[in-house]
Image (cartoon, rainbow, N blue to C red; front, side, top):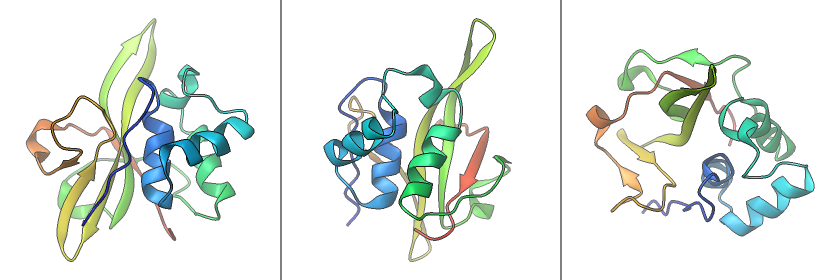
Amino acid sequence: MLKPVIQEETTGCGIASVANILGKTYPEMKETANAMGIYAEDKSLWSETQYVRNMLSQAGVDTSIDEIPFESWSVLPDLALLSIKHHQEDGKNFWHWVVFKRVGGQDFILDSASYLPSNVRTDFDEMHPKWFIEIKNA
């Protein structure tokens, strides 16, 4: 059974998503992130990709070099970071990080938002990813 990590800070979706990929708790991943100079309240965590890439890289996980435009759920790799809820603030792009995972041919989204009734999502029509980052060896 999938056990998603729930973000413990309003702006901690990037930290929680990396924790979901690495099999860590939110406090464990937050400690690692903070030691790297990455903090949930830093808007770069959900407006740029380098912080999540750095956290994954430090754990030995490879990612796709670029963000890959989302085309359909069926062509996603078995594990990916997705950007959803795109919006702009002062001309800068922001999003919410979620994890796409395919297990035994079944597709799931691990969404760390604390307000959701279920953090394992299959309501794909409600999510509108713009692009994804492939996770290669987690």
